[in-house]
Length: 293
Image (tube, rainbow, N blue to C red):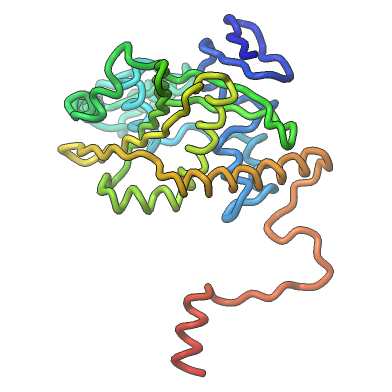
């Protein structure tokens, strides 16, 4: 049975729970469960040691994330408030002071030119024939937090879909990503580079575990370029990639469960008796062997 927890009530230790009251900061600060980002960080090129350190030493806000976070807030109608800093740049001390106050208050500081860009990007999403209908007001729920326990490992998991559409016939998880290049080929490379297929699989499993997808669910990416005219690419996660992402999650969950049980968080090498060998990537080894050997 899925529980919809009222405001101020912590999620129980087991069983699916839906939270509509959590802020993004509260969601990301949770150390009792693991998210898609955490599972991806446990696997190559990451490792448990780096994941464990980063989890307990959160990084300060990064300027490069402000634009994406602001677009999310503008499109979804939920998220951190936007504060416009009435200066052309941050050269003046007063401008930097206002920016830092906004960060301390959990808000997104934007210069006027950045605010104009965010408004233009949100307008481009609304005009798009596919993205506009997906994000139509009242068509879905923004940033709903879902918790459940993985039955194979007993690990508590969590997801927070950008936009969740739940209908009697189908459930659709929509993920909005701002990018430097929304060309479908570039989007495909981004899925591989950032393991977005792993994210998609976990989100689908989460909505299913919470009972929000009785007839199945689909995971849809909405990629938007940060360069004018802010073009948009809408694509559904392919079935094979979903299966691969789920397999990656299963391995990461086993690693996390084992590290938690032992309270040991190894680096890339782990405990060894001999010094391992290292060489070039396999494609370079093959190419150079053919040329020189």
